[in-house]
Each structure stands twice: as C-alpha cells, then as structure tokens.
Image (tube, rainbow, N blue to C red; front, side, top):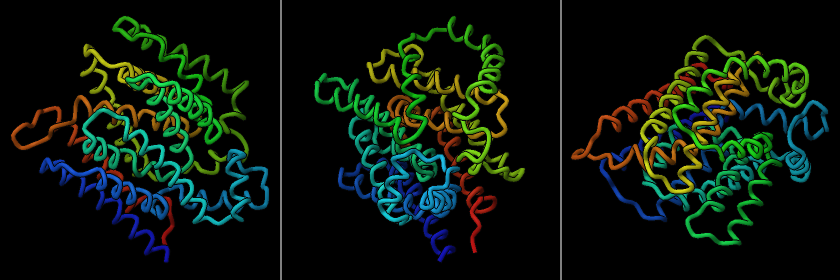
Length: 358
C-alpha cells in the first residue's frame, strides 16, 4: 500500500504540472469549471501526499496528540480536532486540505492576472509545499484576507471578513502571529536609498537577533527540547542540501526579477502590497538565514510566505502570454528556472526523500 500511495502521488504531481504546461504552450483557454477540476486534483494529491516529507511527521504528531503528549507543538485547534475525529488521519488530512484549497480558490478568484500562468507557477513552486500542511492553510487565510481588504471596490462586509481571516490565521500556525506584526512593515515605501541602507544594516540585525533569540525567543521558536521543529528537522544528505539550495536560489532569483521589473511600474493598491511583501519577506528571510539557528527550518518557513505574492506578480506582469509568436527572453529564463525547481523536486522525491517507502 505505501508504495502505491507513493507512486500515485508522484504521478498526480507530475501529471498536473505537465498538463498545465501543455495548456500554456498551446495558449489554450479553459473554462472556470476546468479550473475547479484542477483544484480537485490538487486536493487529491495533498490528501494522499505520501511523497511529501511531512506525511509521516504529521502521522506521528497525530499519535502523540491522541495521548496528550506534552511535546506536541501543534496549535490547540488541531489538538482539539484530532481528538474530535478520534485520530483519524485520513479525515484530518481531508479536512485540512479542503479548507486550505477553499481559501486558495478564493485568492484565485480575486487575483487579476493570467490565471493559467498563475496555476502553472503555483503547481511547480507551491503545490508540493502546500501538501506540507497547516502553515500553508494559515498563509492562504492571510492572503485571502488581504485581497478582500484591498480589493478595488471597497465593501464593508469584505473588509470585515478579510480582517477576520487575518486574525484567524494566527490560530492555525505561528506564522500567522508573526505575519500580523510583519504587516506593519508594508506601510513603508521602498526606494533605492532605503534598500541600500537596509542591506548595510543586515549584520547589525543578525548580531542583535542572535542575542534576542538566545535570551528570549528560544522556546517560542522551538529551538530547544522536543518541539515540532526539532522533531521535524532532518539532517538530510549532501544531495538534499544541494537540492534545497537550488530551490532557494530559484526563489530568490524569481523574487529579484519581480522586484526589478516592477520597480517603476504604476501598481494598484493590492499590487503595491504584494510587491512590498516580496521585498520584506526576502529581506527578513535573509536575516534568518544568517542567525545562529541549528537548522534552516525557520528560514525556509519564512521563505514559503513569499511564494503566493511572487507567483501573483509574476503571472500578472512578467510570465504571461507565452506563445510561439511572442516569446520574451524573460519568459524563457523564468521557464528555465521553473524547470530547475520542478526537476530538483522530482530528484528529491525519487532519491533523497525522507519518506521510507516499504
């Protein structure tokens, strides 16, 4: 059974990506109902995502939650739900991913971009991580809340619902708590002088950040004892480290393409917020990378947040209208980066996945 789940998950993952890539290459327009079917495939892959590194980790956490193990660092709402469903892992995953993709579908309805390109970027860059679990649920709630609040037509009901989603996202993952504080940075305008100044003070932030973490934030960030991050962290092999850095470099390069391409564009309100999100997440992630933390989990978790705004801006302004009669060098370069990301993910799945298939 495990090997079948592994094979089916891998097949669905690659089938969806290749199918969307085919539609992009032939410039095929598809109906809204077809998008819905694609999202159903996303849910199926996530529920049966045996090829993802978190599949067994969550299974172990389920067992620990059933016996009220104090080492479990799951949010209370998950512990409550696990006990409610008597630790049924299938029901837990089904609920988690249906809810996650409902919020992603909401984002998909509000983005004003080339939706087919949004989906191919999402499938390559985010689908595999989406199956990781509760962090992406929190992130999707947060971004849907932002889209509702900043939507072109101001509507009080949507603004209130958006605020509710922003606040609620903090109950589903600690990322949501950090992001509520992080939103204050989005008020600040970005220009060349500020960017140069911020780059110069990175060593200062790293120095004082290490002191702050060591003295006050060790427990909150689960850097000691038996917290979830410590249980989840995998030393991995040399090749896993190589694959991780390939994907990190791809994300950084794609983010820099967005930041450079749109630096002088006249953007809508939501686009300005997403642009600032990309900049500040990359900046804060870089600081986390240089902090004295034993593993890269926190750095990678912060980097996960950049994916939705980056994908949105890429599909709206950069990677679009990819046809044989209109191919830009930027589009070709983005396509090459997507291939590198997709290929490295497949290498990880086949060769150095943390899942033990028997």
